[in-house]
Image 1 (spheres, one colour):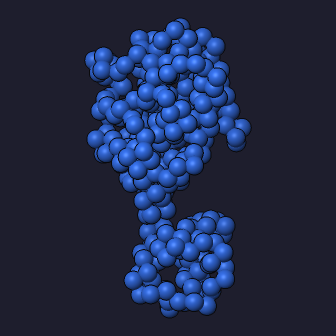
Image 2 (cartoon, rainbow, N blue to C red):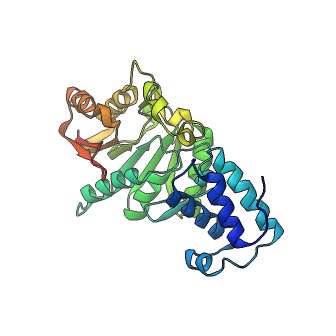
Image 3 (cartoon, one colour):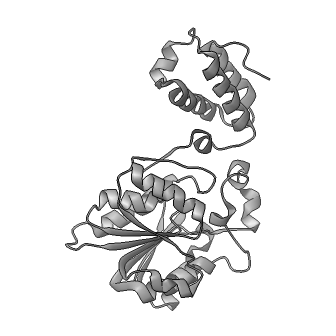
Length: 289
């Protein structure tokens, strides 16, 4: 099915009719607004005032393809090739997770912890993906030396692109945190931050298809029989690399907060704090070496 005409009102009606049942009404409106902004440079106000105007055939084709992709569940961020995080724009594709608002909270926790400290911190971001955490921290703490690691060549390519476009000097390393022999290449540091894979295979059935079917499984899922595998390795890495009273900052599975805290305490971390996100879910742990 195609949009019946190149009139703006018909394009909006097409979005609503084709995406009904796949998205909430407000979300459909927002998706249409994003597409108009990206394809023809219109603001939300422009869109409200110009329902009777028409778009050219080339742009009409873009709207047709967009609705088709959205209907089958492809995330709008992949469709447009961009996402926003901590006030910055990031390129994203299916090599990386789409940055989440809750991860912005993790970044802010680190910024707040670092506030007032008279030092040049060395920060290591494990599993950097799009580079959003590392780049946001570098922009907010410009004197920091930031290292970003990932096991995926494709993810590192995306992160390097984002570092360039956001004018952030980041040291990138291709490294698997689960491989202890690779730890020697990671520098001693004041802060280790990570949003590692933490969704169990069992939990995958509860996820939206547009997450499960499109975002990289390598960055999402862990085995049911070892859900804390990344946290174990990161905790051990921190004991080797964190300077005295260094900070470990983690995003976690909300169902495994207690277990993750116990793991860190057993590894010898101090001041282990389990913190909630804005939705009231156990989402972060801060701990010190």
